[in-house]
Length: 324
Image (cartoon, rainbow, N blue to C red):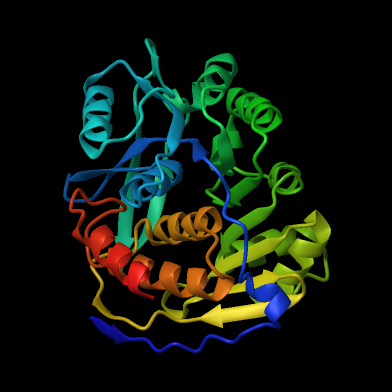
């Protein structure tokens, strides 16, 4: 179904626009789950929010280091070959001799996904010492991770060590996947982050766990979250309604100016995060970053799954961004 979307961005005062940001140096470090999304028809696409983000960052020329763990199995071999073919650095990928490479069963309802994530997969057993050793070879500009990585004690330990050892700030992608999260766990991670990205549904769910008088709308919940955890930015994606940003007490909102034939929305939020991180690394203005993130994530909805081996989508947007 074609959807027409129009730009309704609202500018905050100039001091919150982000113009003139100093670009962050060196490379992003992306830590977390790498797995295969398995669809109802039996097809599978490489996924996991951190991997999806890293995939796009590589295509944008930012050379991310992916820190994760896979099984010593056929799917693990396929993953490594795919990463190498895309030009990605595999130095941070650990191989577990005993546990299988991660898989998630995806169910689609009108193009919108739900996920069945089994416990005890290879990425749950990320070794902290090996992760730190890999990351120590990179002067990390920022650390990206989601909340799902913290569902296991081993994952939480690895995140703690990486946060201590990487000097760069933290971009946290909140993924509330039942039953693998808790309000206290997510809150603890947010308190050490500089930037946080959530969906409108996720920010309301999180708000309802924090207080009996929870904010009634995502905007109020975003402002409350920023104040509670001293976050520099709270970015909230709203599906076909676009996204909005809370930054320094000001708002910026937009909708993608694209008409697209939606195949599915799997990974759209991760595509958005990848562009947002690119904007932070390249020093884009906040307004430009928002509109570019919305544009790219809408374009990704025209293909199956969260990643595509076709660089034309990435290259087309890179060319547009260079001309702007």
